[in-house]
View 1 (cartoon, rainbow, N blue to C red):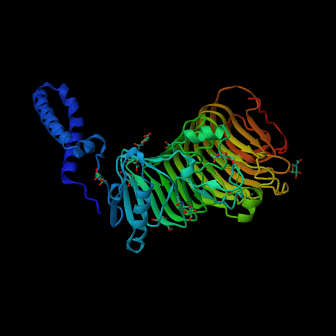
View 2 (cartoon, protein in one colour):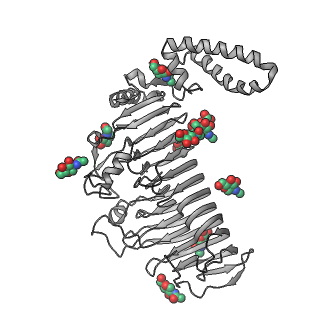
View 3 (cartoon, rainbow, N blue to C red):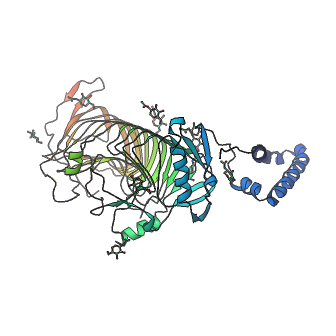
Length: 493
Ligand SMILES: *[C@@H]1O[C@H](CO)[C@@H](O)[C@H](O)[C@H]1NC(C)=O
Ligand SMILES: *[C@@H]1O[C@H](CO)[C@@H](O)[C@H](O)[C@H]1NC(C)=O
Ligand SMILES: *[C@@H]1O[C@H](CO)[C@@H](O)[C@H](O)[C@H]1NC(C)=O
Ligand SMILES: *[C@@H]1O[C@H](CO)[C@@H](O)[C@H](O)[C@H]1NC(C)=O
Ligand SMILES: *[C@@H]1O[C@H](CO)[C@@H](O)[C@H](O)[C@H]1NC(C)=O
Ligand SMILES: *[C@@H]1O[C@H](CO)[C@@H](O)[C@H](O)[C@H]1NC(C)=O
Ligand SMILES: *[C@@H]1O[C@H](CO)[C@@H](O)[C@H](O)[C@H]1NC(C)=O
Ligand SMILES: *[C@@H]1O[C@H](CO)[C@@H](O)[C@H](O)[C@H]1NC(C)=O
Ligand SMILES: *[C@@H]1O[C@H](CO)[C@@H](O)[C@H](O)[C@H]1NC(C)=O
Ligand SMILES: *[C@@H]1O[C@H](CO)[C@@H](O)[C@H](O)[C@H]1NC(C)=O
């Protein structure tokens, strides 16, 4: 069952790379004759290969690179009877492969290679010490018929399916209580084929909350890298109450319109997490850091903390590039967002909460954000009045404080800042330093504040609201704000 890439296959693929390199040689006459002979030779081998079937397949869609061996034992999905024709249901093959790997946990686990092809499957569970490797051209396709999707109890910190009372659909790729799991590849794809789900959701044909694409719960030491996730039925990648997760060099795609709730990544009650070098363009928030909501989230009491997001490009026409909340009842702290670009989006970065949530959002650092063509750049909103049920405590007021914005730039922004605290939920200790954002409307009140306490350091463009204290570049106080509670919010533009 161990996989060996055939020597012939490797050699053959090297020749294919050489062919690409040789194309410019056509333009240098002294090499042309040689090139013509060379191509004829390659064509001969090509035709010969195509007559033996498998080789032709390999040339057509196989990877140009040999697959790395990342675990002591390596399996090929086809060893378990899988057929990558986009029609055959391969759930059993995935389950058998993962069962085999689950038996190797004391031997360093195993790697499951998914070759090029379209591998239709129903939801399946991962195991510890597993590396799922998606080769170039490999696509895992989620079956669209919800009958195949198992129902699971609601998440404890949500107390609710999230869209419907009671159980919810599980995720296409799921894991609970795991350790040391890697999902990686040569940019292979996991597709949720969400279109049918989005349509049924809009037509109110579903009785349960839609499932995420990948959901990993109560686990640690997780690495997701070098793959593409697309068209999730619901949130795309949902780590829940996990520790030590790295998401690196991942592309996440869904249509930017009419793909409801297709958030890119939702770190939820997670600790020690790194998201870097990703491209995310989806139908809801690009990244949304959460920790449960209202009485359920408060009771569960598991914060999201120590999360770093860097070198990420995001697009969200419906919501925001990076959000915190609105589910934040377990608390959110120690978040760093840096070297991030949000383009062609409704909002850049957003913190959203409401009375009833309790919890806190604090110690949040944004550094080097580029906002390119967005309606509202920075948003803080404290009246996001969506609740699981009537059982929430309206007196459970969240705390919002210690939030800093440094090096905020960009162009084509309508309202650079809208920080809407309230008497009950003031926004405290906000700092702005080094900000210059190109605006689309030369209106006066485009740096909008209400119940915001904090300061600006140095020159800020556009001119900040009067709620903030002014300091010079050397951090000397120039002017104390006399109106921290003043309201200058205008939703009309
Ligand atoms: C997996 O097996 C299939 C069928 O035998 C083969 O075409 C493919 O090259 C193998 N993939 C890897 C990565 O070994
Ligand atoms: C995956 O494991 C969970 C927890 O044990 C279980 O509820 C779920 O039904 C399993 N899913 C599948 C597809 O087997
Ligand atoms: C990102 O993933 C792609 C596709 O797998 C790979 O070619 C590229 O080298 C990766 N980049 C980094 C920095 O790892
Ligand atoms: C990976 O594939 C996606 C979707 O096909 C593509 O948009 C992306 O550019 C690829 N990433 C790399 C690093 O090649
Ligand atoms: C939803 O429930 C209704 C009424 O019980 C039932 O007729 C329908 O088939 C269910 N739909 C799904 C997708 O389960
Ligand atoms: C975190 O997980 C990675 C695997 O993704 C592992 O290599 C590393 O040792 C873990 N770090 C800690 C502190 O456990
Ligand atoms: C991603 O792919 C690149 C190129 O193959 C490789 O160098 C790198 O180690 C991979 N990164 C991860 C985190 O798997
Ligand atoms: C700011 O972020 C951009 C990418 O968004 C990056 O190219 C640039 O190098 C970063 N600047 C600094 C000073 O880190
Ligand atoms: C205000 O927030 C900054 C971080 O943005 C923190 O370093 C500072 O200690 C806070 N000030 C107070 C008075 O809490
Ligand atoms: C501003 O509102 C807070 C309550 O959020 C109150 O404690 C404070 O006294 C008010 N300050 C001024 C200057 O009115």
